[in-house]
Image 1 (cartoon, rainbow, N blue to C red):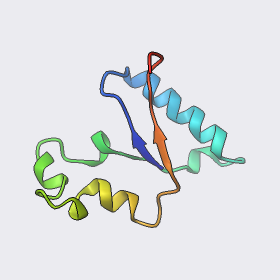
Image 2 (cartoon, one colour):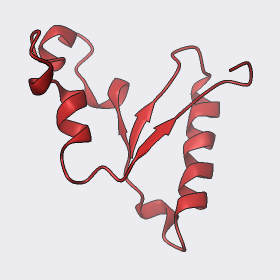
Image 3 (cartoon, one colour):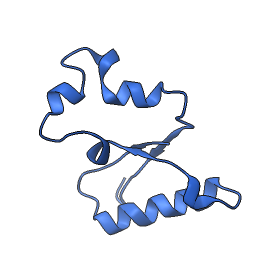
Length: 81
């Protein structure tokens, strides 16, 4: 799953929300669900390169979504959304 998130979410809430999502979409192997999370997958010190140097088809976001392994998008929202 590709994860879209709000930077202001407390990390513990973010992790618990992902765990709940995994439990919801999995029959029995919830720990085997994989997630692509930008702040964990991108080098935050080289963001320009990670987003494809202006070429969106080369961005890590595009490559993650088009990889063939992405089952869907999981959007993390806070309680005020």
